[in-house]
Amino acid sequence: MMRIFFSYIEFKKTGKFFLVVFFMIHLHTGFLFSQTRVDTSKYQSLIKEKIKKISVSKRNVAWMIAGTNSDSVYRVTKNMKAADKTGRIRTHTSSVFTSILSLRKNLAFIGTKNDYSYFSRRFRVLKLDSKHGVTDSCIQAIYYSRLLNKVIIKTATSSFVSTDRYFKKYKKNGSIGTIIPNPGDTIMVNEYDEDAEPFMEVNEYLDDIRRPFQSVICRIASSVDLSFRSKKLITKQQARKIRRILEPGDILLKRDNWQLVNLGIPGFWTHAGIYIGSLKELDRHFSGAKILKGEKPSAYIKKHYFAVWKKMKRHKFRIIEAIADGVKINKISHIARVDYFAALRPQLSNEDIFKAILQTFEYYQKPYDFLFDFESDDEILCSELIYKAYIPCADKAGLHFLMNDLNGSAFMFPTDIVRKFDAEKDNPDKELRLIIFYDASEKQKKSFVSDEVEFGNTWKRTTMDIIKK
Image (cartoon, rainbow, N blue to C red; front, side, top):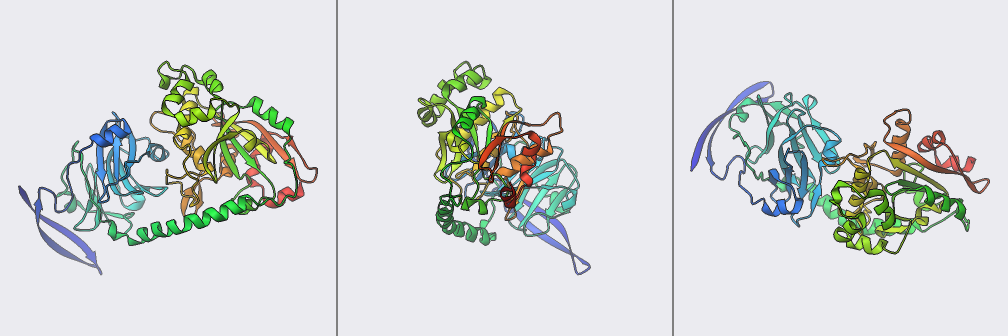
């Protein structure tokens, strides 16, 4: 079966308009756009949600819209590793998702019902609205044209075609829109020639070289202590007080002075983790959560996260953190016997906090991310563990963190958690509450309890501040 189309496309060049007539033979498999049906059963069994739209790149990386109300976004790699991307997009929009286009593992377009489309590349999410030439907010379809090497966004009233090689700028072009088939509810596969971006392949090759090198450097730096002190400023008695007041789900921050590794971490606070307590504590705090369906939290963890259950079954006062050896469950002293310490409690329901804790268990024993890439779920950083645990998604309320920048990509350092706390301190709906803050004095060689105001200002501190104190 074939269809014949005459498409009249106007191009503006050196002040003149040239009319280019394309006589196109559009085969059933699609000459302009790849429109092959795909077996979704293997993806559906993996993500456990109904798939509404799916797009698979040439290298078998699938991005999909899922959920009864089209309110979830997932990515599945060619190795069938699934990642829930809903939370990342939900920090930018609450609209229903309508269309999706997968270009590669870390590159995709997501269209919405009434809030334009979003371009997700690595960790950055860019809203393609009127600033980028897309003037209609109701997105019906997004396609990649192999013939034109363009991304085409079809809205309720017109279509827009990309005008730059990075697909970030668009112009209105109704004639191209007329030949885009209406996808309706069909599940489509959109192919994309990844060879068009060879520098991405080079970067991935360089990452394989950088990873072991940076791993060695970070491990050496983290072992160098220039304080020449045999003990940390927080005492055993103070550490015991800390563990008595903590609850599962509390976000923990720490700093040790005079560590070589501090030079490579922007901001005052240098590490973060989450308190998970013991299995008995989890049973006491989260029994009755809907997700458990009548089970005890400890039984649920044993069934779904056996390695975590085995690690916790005979221990109390545990934390989960991402360190050089990977995502580990350790004693509270690992993060509390330090020079500075703070604990923050998310102002969320027990159900949502429990879901956040379960999310950290998903990353248990994954390696540390020495490339500092928030996009990757295969390797995890300390602050990334906090972010991915508490980011809101379709079935879980969460925290809205303030992001920073690292080498042009969005990033969150431990100090950015304090920056969020300080920005919301006068807001009655603030998302974090300070439980305890141990400040310290290098001159007096002691640590002491301080207040919210002083804690909120710690994100402004510099290395010289510890010398003054």
